[in-house]
Amino acid sequence: MARIGYARVSTMDQNLARQIQDLENPQKGNVDKIFTDKESGKNMNRAGWNELSAYIRDGDTLVIKSLDRLSRNYDDIQQTWSTLLNKGVGVEVLNQPVVNVASNRANSLTSKLFISLWGFIAENERNKIRERQSQGIVIAKKNGVYKGRKPAYSAESTDVGKRMIYEKILEMREPVLRHEVSINSIASRFGVSRNTVHRILNPGKIHFQKRDQ
Image 1: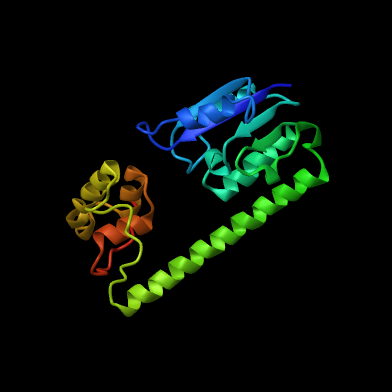
Image 2 (image 1 turned 90 degrees about the vertical axis):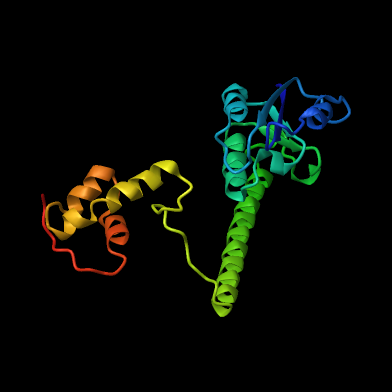
């Protein structure tokens, strides 16, 4: 039954030393092995975490300094917590020991309670985000500055590929007006929806005849 540490910082120029020191400290983490990542906590698809997930076994204990080292997304925390406990892995959080679950209690009522707790927190966080977004939209509309969500395919897109597709589709406007090519064929060619093609070609709501070609 090993104690496996996990340390994470969000960028390459941040230092893992403090987390590693706490994980290795016999009076704190006292871990046998440490996996690390220098990646954002926005998702769980990280090299170090993937290695840890493949390595850790039933009876082991995952040790982290704080919950946000695992993830900054409550949905991910809930799902990962559930996966670990179902695997028989205990979880120990150095800065928040109240949430610790021993490996031999991984399938206990207490662990299931924590999973439900993370679900509640995740839903509460989503509701707060939606509320803040709604309030922001109301204020923006009141001030006359609300523009809505930026389209994915546009001249201002930060995605070079999507910006190129936008420009290519825009070049097809005259052929479409001359009925030389159809909306369907353009959508199929560039792998986008008909609505996307219409939005790019038709800002003035000009009628395009439906035809396949």
